[in-house]
Image 1 (spheres, rainbow, N blue to C red):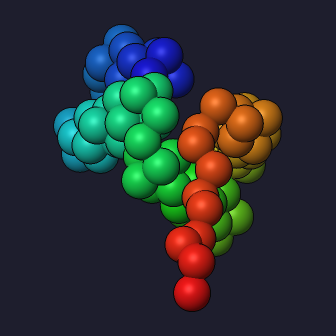
Image 2 (tube, one colour):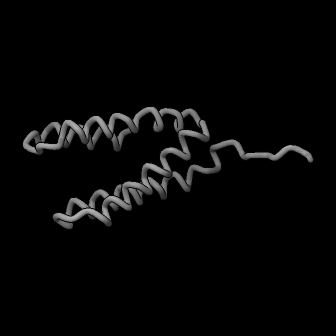
Length: 98
């Protein structure tokens, strides 16, 4: 949640970016998944993985300046590392007897 808040604050502070309102909406859409993962819901955890994988793919596939793309990609990879380290906090899945 801190990552999303910082990114939204940076977009608001810059103000000159034409696509900032749309980016803020997309970042705000991530907050329910962050909250679900914080409450140890597996669906929120999976949604954050998918979100961050999409962030890495977007950083690698879009054109433009390399510095913002590298920052976005590095942030997504950092979040994925933290998600991977947090896997033990989530309940394990146990399949029923057949």
